[in-house]
Image (cartoon, rainbow, N blue to C red; front, side, top):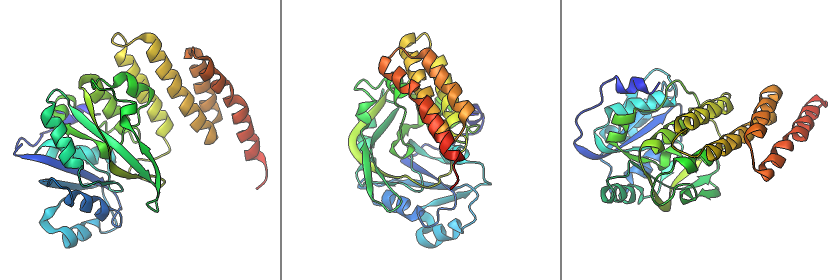
Length: 315
């Protein structure tokens, strides 16, 4: 759990501006793109920490040969992306902490613009940016516009419950946010970033730099395992909704939960998890008051039947 983060020692030597934490696992060929994008920032980054989550592809040798002492390489036994990020954040000396996954990369102005934002707005705990998504061949897919879900005043929880997709590589946060709230939940194998962002959004305003300052690769395996994604996602949103009862409107929270159940029911049915997907669809129906959403929920039944029958047909 993230509470264990608070029980371990945090580096008290906060003597630089920005630390970047890059978790990695067997990404020797992709990792240099991420690191090079940090080294190419127009505002220099003082500390780059690569937390190697038990790689077996000689990542450490590559880092030493290519970067020397410009990158701090920390090895740990394989424990997952949350443990790797937390390890890096505990070691970091920066006043601001930035996250970067080893298959993503930054545009040159990212650090400068996000540091300027946090310097100018001390009440904001975290700032994100727009994200260009690319495929495994570095071809453009689309751009995530974060102003769609984070409003000007920064109190983003109600919007993130409906549309919770923030990408860790877009994040820069104040050190005291992590000191106050803890790090990533190490009990989660997936949806750990969702849980962390929702927790921050409950306590701190979140800002947006409205430029695509990150290129995020999609379409291949990361440090998070895919098998439990739907279950973890649902549990995380259920807890966030329960925590928000009494502070946000119950009808709005029910609508957010219905949307979560609907999205994940569809994903479970695609993966032929018939019983779990149907159960989530029923829960979505029970909470939804939106006629259009109810039609979408009702449409999952024939969708699931078709998928089931297709699975019975010989190849």
